[in-house]
Image (tube, rainbow, N blue to C red; front, side, top):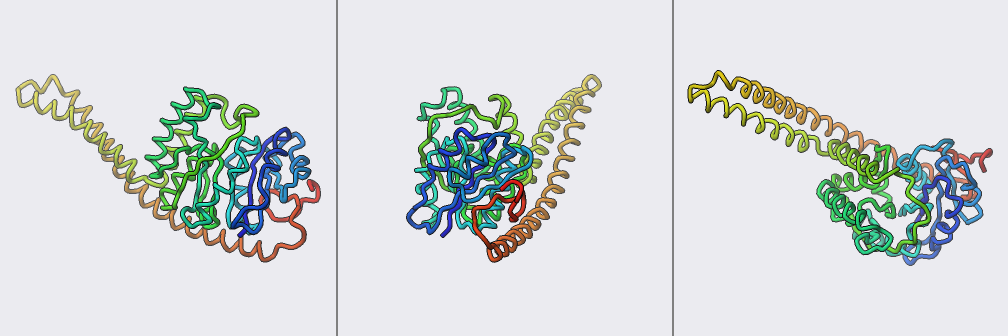
Amino acid sequence: MKLIVQIPCFNEEQTLGEAIADVPRAIPGVDSVEVLVIDDGSTDATVEVAWRAGADHVIRHTANKGLAETFRTGIDACLRLGADIIVNTDGDNQYAGSSIPALIRPILEGEAELVVGDRQVQQNPHYSPAKRRLHALGTAVVQRLSRTEVTDPVSGFRAFSRDTAMLLNVVSPFSYTIETLIQAGSHQIAVATVPIETNPATRSSRLFKSIPHFVVNSLATMLRIYAMYHPLRLFGYIGIVLGLAGAIPILRFVYFYLAGDGAGHVQSLILGGVLVLMGFVALLFAILADLINFNRRLLETTLQKVRRLEAERAVASRKGPDSQTLKEGSGKPDSEDG
């Protein structure tokens, strides 16, 4: 059983060493533990710190591509390196490495395929009352959309089984946290939550500029992914709402028309007709989107099989020492960056 802890990072020379040192190298039920650092185009000494701190693998993006793309790069590399379990943590050392054994235990025991670390935000003194309220509201929405009971949906400290990592496809440019949960619920992947320890914050978040920025991007991600996996339900609801809204002014016109005063309420008939027509178009769009959704699922199945074949081939053909700097998107040593 091989565990790889992947650490996406960008300019984390101050904290990356502590994050790597915090990873336990001996865990019951795991034969080997390796650390993979994905450097997202850092301009500081992040890569050098990674090697000095004992990272087993380093992948470098030549330019900053964002958290979601860095997460995708890490997952693909972990699969090529033969990981049976993948743990994702942060380079700012927010998550305590001592919680990794508890995080992967549900996977080792066959109880879950994706495990999310719960920072216990409502009791965590590191979070303000405003952030706690916002977190509670966002959690309720994500639980509803993903049909999971995850209590900290934006936590980046999570573990994936190999099969789950092959199945999930991150398309959002913002973050992977909410998207992977909605995908997991859609694919009926067993998801668990375990309480974890956190370290004091070392810096402000780089993922978003402000709370409104985070909320807007999170809502956009939820809408985009939910529409991708449940288009018939989403656009069907919109069509029904528009149709019912259009029926009200139409019925109003009919009432006044039967009362002999229809001439003065033609605008209600026009408004109602427009709304009903919009609802009908939305229902047609829902049917079309649902057909596209079936095609997307077939493509996902094909992608999963291709991923599995590529990973198995990479594991079988790997030669030489593990501690190499890898080129972005490849398994070849980068002689310039190494």
